[in-house]
Length: 283
Image 1 (cartoon, rainbow, N blue to C red):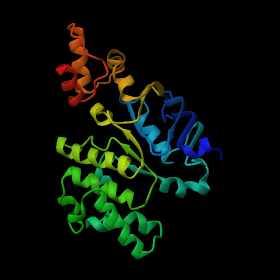
Image 2 (image 1 turned 45 degrees about the vertical axis):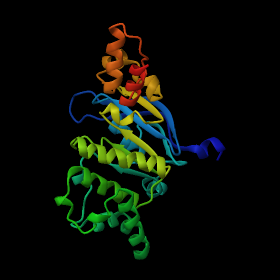
Image 3 (image 1 turned 45 degrees about the horizontal axis):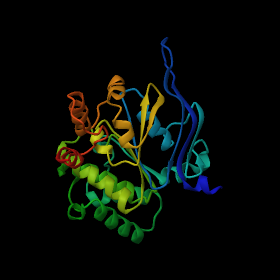
């Protein structure tokens, strides 16, 4: 293994994925020759219109499905290698859109313990992991609650704790805030940023909310199964017209800067946050 390979958490090599159709219709090409990699400790946002291939990618990372063509490597393991399926799923945890689909037990701490129990972790170690995972998502006070009594944001944080208890090195978030209200979204985003910044965990965040990924290291933009843009949030979001053309929004402050520039106000085009906007206007 070279140094370069050791730094990569996920590598996608010339991946094509086709959903076969049962009836007379044509097959659906979800991904069409996709190439990129994600480094360990990186926070990468993946955006694209519905049907662009985002969720297909997420399932490929976690070996839920396998490429029709090409290869996906997770921490040096090829997802097609059946022998290493558990290693891959333990390395790359997955948090879905609807937390209710990920909660399995009637008590919060039992739910968080479910994953490590299945991995055969000894009981004392499970106890430690459950406590630590609940502390990271700031839900220790709810350990003995029933999950159905919690808010959407709290449920999603419990789902994240359940993944953390399995000690993955990478977490894939597939639109984790889509079903939440604004305060639930804030709770979950605070947790995601904390995992990346404080725990140095590799985070892949698939989302429809552009403001959630202004702090990402890199953004990958998908359209019709291909990567159409890749770069830092500043370089991606200043392409307002190009993004709108493929049905995507930009963060509200970037939109405002764009409109102000159109009105002849000299303001930079890569503003992402309210703080940056205030600073630019004050100058």
